[in-house]
Amino acid sequence: MAVVSETVRVAVVRQASGICEYCRYPEEFNSGRFAVDHIHPRVQGGTDDLNNLALSCRGCNERKQDATDAPDPATEKIVPLFHPRRNRWEEHFAWSNDFRLMIGLTPTGRATIARLQTNHSGVVRQREVLHQLGLHPTP
Ligand SMILES: [Zn+2]
Image: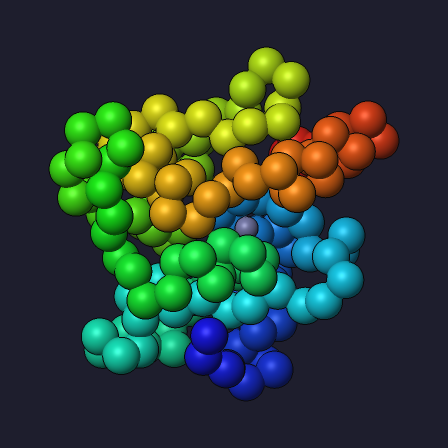
């Protein structure tokens, strides 16, 4: 995880409406601050431009690392990961009927869910609790 200035971080949080742009978990219910993800990693020439930055929970950030693509589990083909600035979340993901699980609608959606493990048991239980409180999914 690369560090950006506080000014840039505030802009990233505002741009993301305070939710992880991959798994949609809200930062306000997290014990620590979310990371600022360089969608195209700095080590590969990615910049600090807002168009290359996304708010990311620690889990998604640690699992994404410097990846920009990953295998689609349905086909094993390498495909681009979800790009929060270029892609629309709703085109690549949906919630299961009980809102516990993210479902990949596209190769990119499936690859991103697998790489970032957005349906691991901890986050699924957090979604259950937030849903019971009327706080998940976020609009
Ligand atoms: Zn996340």
